[in-house]
Each structure stands twice: as C-alpha cells, then as structure tokens.
Length: 282
Image 1 (cartoon, one colour):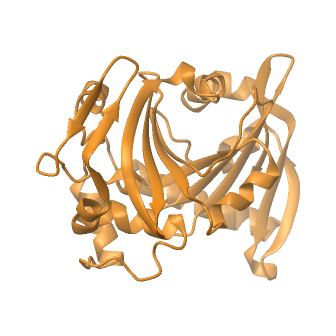
Image 2: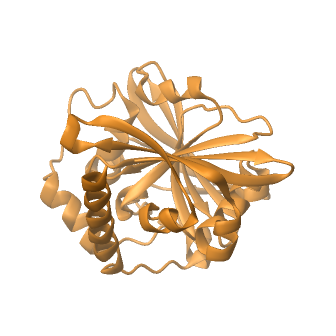
C-alpha cells in the first residue's frame, strides 16, 4: 500500500502540473449567440490530429457505436457537413433560427476539452454507452456560470448518425439542474467542497503493481486533497444516451478522457436536502 500511495501521489503531481500549463477562456455571451458556440483551441485540435491523423472519410464501422461516430464527427469537417441536416434548426424558449450549409462553421464539441462527462441516476443505464441499437443521442454543452444548456440532437437514419438540431434552454429546465448548481459550487469553492464530502469517503483505485487488482479504502479530507481529480468548472460537455432522471437523489458522474483512456467515477448522494460526494474511483 505504501508503494501504491507513492505512485498515486507522483501521478497526481504530474497530472496537476500538466493541467496548470494550459489556459482556456470562455465567453458565454458568444456561446449563446452563434452556432460555432464553443471557442476553438488550435493547440488541442492539433494534438488530436497528431494522435489520430485526419482522413476525409468516415470509417466504415463508425456508425455502429455512437461514441465512435461522435469522435469522428467532431474532428472531420467534411463528415460534419455530410452528417448535419441542413437547413440546421436552432431553437430556444422563444424562437428558432435556421442555418444553411454555407453558414455552418466547424463545431468541435468536446475535442477542445481534456475530457467529457456522463451522468447516471441508476446502474442499469450505464449499459447505454455500449449499445449499438440507439437511435437518438444528445451531446450537451452545460454552461454552469450562465446556467444555460446547449443540446445537440443526433438521430440515426437508415443506419447512419446525423446531427438534426440544436436546442438551447436554461439549466433549471434540466432534470439535473439542481444537482448541477450544487456541482458548480462543489468544484469551485474549496470550503464548500470540504463540507460536502461524506465521512468517510469511499475510495477505489487500481494497484498496477499487483495485476491491476482493485484496492478499496476510505479517504479523509486531507487525503482527498491529495488524490482528488481535476474537476471541470464553468463548462461541462456531457453525452446523454437516454439516461432517465426522476428527481434524483443519487448521481454518478463518469469522467472520460479524450483519446487517453482516463476514467474517473464520482458518486454523489442527497440526504436531508444536501448533496454530498460519497465515493471516488479512479
């Protein structure tokens, strides 16, 4: 266990140092006003293309699993133009706008981020990510600071995925609205975060020195500060495969790295009107 502790501490310091070397700015007014809503970062797109060289054609099997399709759709301009339904409809609570193919600007979705998240209320919905019979999926840009939600709606038609429309609404309309307001404060306010951690906090990790055996234990507040993951603030990109939420009292947030295999799982539970982080797995 001592070796594991030293290894995890080294890994944490490395990840933090990498993260601190990046900067990002977001203009929420611009996000709401124009179709290419999420600011493009040339360095991140360059990194993606170095790891996955850009080809003009969509791989033959990409439409089978939505996760494979959306990665290619996000990075390939030609595919994005071919698989977007034009004129493209953007709606909000009060009006709608139509965008022509000539007006379209490349939308990188989550490729500008280091990771995206998926929320679940119950364990059975976790199987949705790997199902090949889905016909509708939403990629959501959650703007926590301005309490806005941009939802990109994808439909599968004749075996092929297409982006069909975008809907913009306030976060309070989302079934996760209350939780997301809590999460935004949890991620950005250290004092509030410390008060919102269960005692004890359950912790699960993998012992790479012992055949990837799962190691289970608990963390106190001081240990949490050492092992906690990078928590996205300000904006989240999420994929909604059809998960159901009914006044949830438990939310599992799965954080998946872009092109690096990272997966971290945070589970929150609501008790006596207050949300708390109850377990963390990496």
